[in-house]
Structure formats: structure tokens, C-alpha cells
Length: 198
Image 1: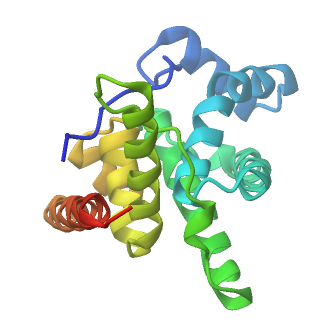
Image 2 (image 1 turned 30 degrees about the vertical axis):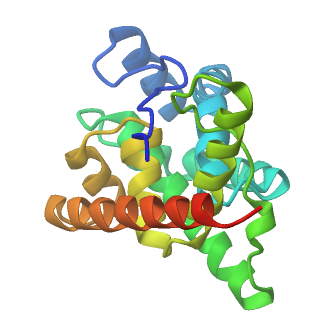
């Protein structure tokens, strides 16, 4: 199986960027325009991450994004300006999506049909690329929640292992183990699907 592409969706403000730090300080002081600016910087990445964590369910991802930014607004006063803002926001994102998945699991079983295309993989032909995308997202949907979260953060969102560990609230060793297990399961899933007769 070809390796998952490690692409960041777009550049966003960083805690080390002076202008961004100024925006965060203004938002913490109650400046609504500054908070709106922060939301605009991150809304696309938050929605894409929620889509990936919630098995490509767009409606759930939109609901999650609203909850994420509401939770961000409520807890902005607790943010330590020396911490990396993106890691803090992604931790909120992971927690909101985890809560939604638990609620969904109580309501019904997640269907593999919800897995869609969207992962960029290297392939010579669009048809092959689309089939690989579909299979990888189907494989992601079968992973346990923590393994899926680790792979999404590390391989799809481009976070380092240490950043993913901070976001998930666990050790780097645990993240590496979850990623290794997840990649093996994805590879086996794809190999099984490729061997299946048409």
C-alpha cells in the first residue's frame, strides 16, 4: 500500500506569530472581532479534522465545528499564551468529536458507507486514486477511536508525534503504538479489498 500523504490543509496563525498572539489577547479581553478573525483562520482546518474524525459525516462535522468554537470561546480565558494555540484547539476538536462518536455509538452503529473520498494519495490514474481514497476512508472508519485519532492528527493533519500526544492527552509512546497499529490495519484492510474478486 502506498504511504498516506502528509499534507497540511492551509497555513494558520501560530502562537509564535506576534500578530496572532495579539489577536488571542484581544479575544481573551472580549473583543468579538478578534475572536471572529481567529475563527476564520481555523474554521476550514477544524471542519476538515472533524470530517476525518467523524467518518466523513458532513452534518456531524458542521455540528462539531460549532461546538468546538463555542467551547473555544468559553474557555479562551484559560489559554496560556505560551502554549501552542493549534495544539490547544485540536485537543478541543478531538474531545468534541470523541463525545459525538460516543453519543452516536449509543444511537446506532456507524456504517462503513459513510466513509468517503478526500485523502490525497499518490496514484497515476484518477480512478485508482479515488478507489484508494475510498478504501482508506473505509479502513479509517473501522479503526478504534484512539487509533483513528492518532492517524488523523499525525498522517492527515501533519502534527508531530509529540503534538499529537499533547492533543490526545497521552504519551508519545502510546501515540506511536496507536499509529503503528492503525497503519498496519489500514494496510491489511486495503490488501484484503484489492484481493477481493470483482
